[in-house]
Length: 331
Image 1 (cartoon, helix red, strand yellow):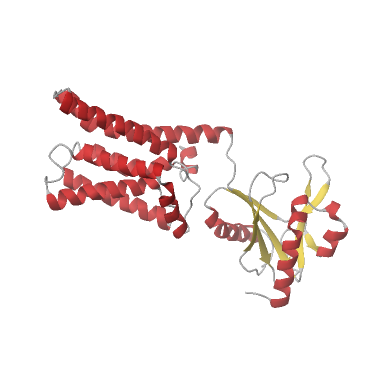
Image 2 (tube, one colour):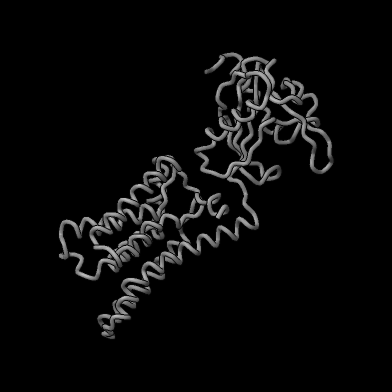
């Protein structure tokens, strides 16, 4: 359970839960009321996903559209467009259409994410394929049995109309959860690495590290963190880490929130993308870490062997940012 909570933002099929609840609830409650409840659950989940997680789960969007359409048709037209005992296949067919559109025209969905600056790193293709294949086979079987073969037993009807749709979406959820568990048990790489470099008076604050291969001491930025969430949340994450780190140090240290200055990736140095932040400090006397000290950029140029390769790759960007901050004192 802890694993599922940790990777809940990657378990994309959780967006199918409102649909599963609705499909099961249609067995026990009046269709219109259950559709309204399912729509309310979907809207709440969609709002939380959008405003809190800065994401847009495709299956939440799919369920909201499908359930909402069925609810409005049943509410305002009665049985005119959705005959009795056909609400479940109708809902399944609408969800199938949305999954098919996602597979054939994913740029529509991704353009919506880009417009609102939402997380676009999650793929729904595997689960969408499962829905298209299983729902397509199920609806085809239902059509053949009802209209061609003409089998009308209660057992066949309830199995195909009520049990099968919910089972299809439960299978999608199980597939996704199993895949996440298998991936997390072997290797869970971060989305990126956040590096935060404190600067003051055109200097940079560094601390010593021991090289893993040789044990030699090299200097690098004091704040380095793996980051696994949406890239748009990295600035808030960096500010929280800085606050937590400075609270451990004696005395008070005034600082401005970390500022993102560079996103890059160097395959020979690190397999992950790097987001580089600067952390402006008001006075050099303020301590960031007890074992560190300030360096001028001239020292980095004169003795590059004493500094990490990643820091040397960032040197020019850091020097420009530090000099600009010293000269103009941006706020």
